[in-house]
Amino acid sequence: MKTKFTQQVCSIIISGLFLWHYASAQNSVLVNFGGNACNNATTPFFSMIKDPLTASPLLLSNCSLAAQMPDVYNVFIAYNPKNNKLYVADIRDGLQTKIWLLDIGLPLNITCPPSIPVAPTYSYSYISNNFEFDNNGDLWSFSSYNSTTGRCNMDKFDVNTGTVISTRVLQFPAGNFPTTIQSGDLTILPNGRMFASLGSGTCRLYEITDYSSTTGNASATFLRTLPKDCYGIAYLNGILELAGSNFNGNCYYFDYNIATGVLGTEKVFQNGQAPIDNTSFTPSVGATKRLLSATKINSNTADLTYEIYTENLGNVILNNVSVTDDLTAAFGTGNVSNVSTSFVTGSNAGGLSLNAAFNGTTVTSILNPGHNLPNKVLSNRDYFFKVLVSLRATNLNGATTYLNSAIARGDIGAGNALSLVNVADSSNNGDSTVVDPNKNGNAADVGENVPTPFLFSTLPVKFLAIDASLLNNTTAMVKWQVAVPLINAAKFEVEYSMNGRAWQTAGTFIIDNNTRGQYQFNHQNIPFGNLYYRIKQTDIDGIFTYSKIVLLQPKNTNSSYVIYPNPAGNYLAVSAGYNAAGKAEIELYDATGRKLLGKTMMAATDEINTTTYPTGTYLLKIWNDGSAVTHKVIIQH
Image (cartoon, rainbow, N blue to C red; front, side):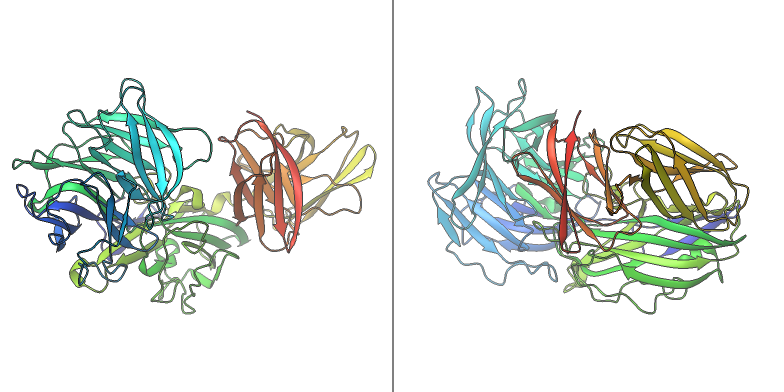
């Protein structure tokens, strides 16, 4: 369902099933430092190339650096997402690094600087071997390579002063040491993944992992040997471009698909230029959509609430961000009413505003025009937003699956029509964790734009509340409330667990009155210790759903959040009770008090991936309404 992006949106009905076909695309701008012709190494310049991997790459600019350096050798170029500027480093004398800071007009323009001083912006004695900025504006470089041990330093240094902020040992894999680190290049994806092409005579491609950790060594995973030496590497929305030259009229590049690991055939380097070092700026947007709640009103009507998540996945500010949602295309003309939108609490740090005229039918734009969306930098939370879309759908058919997608868009280069770069993404079904499932930085891959389904006939019972309390030392009382009428519902089962992972059935209720909304069950002879409860509801056709999980509390206490399982294996879940007020901030600390994670709880239940945390004891702190509660949790693999 992925095609080149156009402005058209179309829907097709097959046997009552709406199939949405959204065109979507991502695009990057390749930045090349080198010669303006393949056989010219004496006239240094840098260029910016739109649509670099297409059959017709467009040269946006050709900026001379002849006044700053005599030729193209021993020069690096890097784009800094933190300030949207380029940095060119000359290390030719081996004694100092000279750096020029270049303003290319982003995000509104893509153009050569009006003037570039002959003298460098910065000069210092630290000598880097290749360098690249990550999305936080930190600058990374290799140094001090030992070809016998296959080790070098992975340096983070201050671009203004040349001061090395931190150094880690980088270990290359045995049998695949690079011949040198002075020939090659590195690139960092907006999501933090680092790749490098290194070596002369034999050039190898690596992924560098753990480079930003504070403990242990960094490591290099060998990916493949390249057919030719590649001096430049750039990230282009899920693809690596690896470029090189024989300095005798042969300038080439290979494309490498990060998701599949497939290396493309040799191609002539873009616009007949000579590549020496590459970088890129990569506008990219991603969106997901999930059905948060659905309540049957009558035999053909339901109230639905969707959550739309939109994120700037790239390394440059996006202009003119928009999200559209055509509800008529999903539910049919005249079948949508009571439409409303709101931002999820805590998920609009960028200060965007909603379009009051949005109705999902004649007006499909959710946001007001003219908004920008920053790229992700450090702990800022302004690079994404979440919107709730609620509606009433009528004339629903139990045999129809209603598919619904949202479309997120943005652009850069608006100051120049030729340099305008549009990006778009059709939403993937699920929460924010599935915006880019293969983690290659491109949300527009095949299989990552699944429409969100709704099937009226299998609409589950909606749980309104569940509570567990002690009647005495041996008996617990479990109460729950559901929305009525109960359509297609067969039974309730009261389940309990001592650890939040292994569940047993305490009792069963056959549903013989579909207008009854409140239930109560006394659990006799309860075991000692913590007890978790949940209600399993099963339909006549065997489909089932669960209530929230509650922890049995002593009398006269009220805990709004439940932590499970404990001990945790691959995940730790935090579930808000039905009476939990407002959003919550979740923080995870290790036994030494070091903060490992901080996140805002955006849904009723949130999960923490604990696969990378070693077995041990941790502290989970939950902040809500200005107060905090700390839980001791154990991670056990």
